[in-house]
Image (tube, one colour):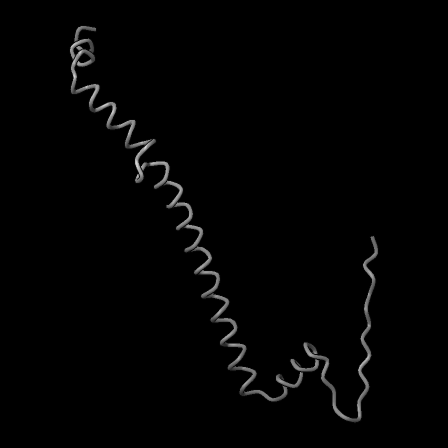
Length: 98
């Protein structure tokens, strides 16, 4: 017990303790702020990976559509309901039964 009493009565102990409390809670670069920034950074990196994967997928789809006219025609018919002059297009919408 004498060992702790020696350090507790020391002015440098209180100065160090004050510094640690300031560093953890009140400083502009506090540990809490750093933790929040790290979590935001991780989320942004995950978004970046997702969008890079989506870009690769879209680029491959564009390359395929530029080289394959049959696929391009199928895509235009399905997405934009395009048709030839002598055709009629009918849309069948199914109701969702609950």
